[in-house]
Length: 99
Length: 198
Image 1 (cartoon, rainbow over the protein chains, first blue to last red):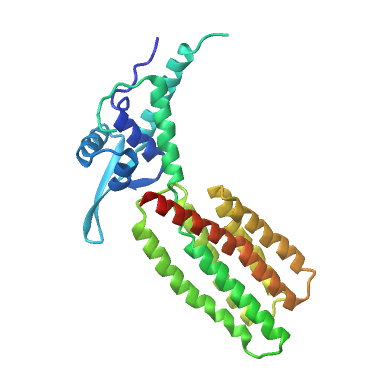
Image 2 (image 1 turned 135 degrees about the vertical axis):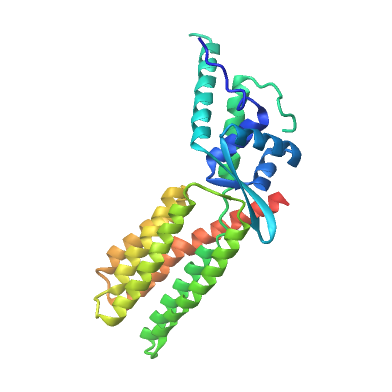
């Protein structure tokens, strides 16, 4: 029986954000936007969804007198990501032709 | 990546994960300014000190006071780079801790060797130079610094069998191999990446 893929992570932009945040300790919103090529509005919505799921933490602060948003992945997010990758690998294993 | 819920196959998902992880890794940028600064300062100090001893000019040892000026410049570089950074890597704080402890140790070694007559004090410095350099090269997988750190230790061993003034030449060679040359490589990479982003 296959595990269902996490619907929060099985979305192109949210998965891209999570993969990016997994590789760094924390990243500014502008950095994530540059790397994902997403619009600020769309990215904001997806970041909010990840935050509501408890997968990432969002910290708002001031940098040189300008508002600055920083994101980092949470332990819950790391666990969810690992489970997601494991589930993907299961799907791919079955999809491979047997020699 | 505009659409929110564009359907993805399993292999597309894995490809996206790999691509994003690689993007973050490739984006790590060191301006090379700190490594160039220290590589340059230690080379100048060692060579001036060596020349002073050879030419019997008094007071050339005071050139090492230049390192205190370099500390001030280093603080400015660190503040500027910290402000500019849009993300931090997992190993950044560990690397920062290693270099700060190295700075503190160097300050104490300098004080210790100035009040006590330590035989071949430069050997101790060479051993110390190798520690953060090798650790940085190893952690960041940056071979020039890894080899630079090893070079410091090779020169440290060689310095145990070399008359004191000539050890200063080892110090300058170590500074070149451990910091100045890696610094030039990092600077070139940084400028190329910056050019690519424009």
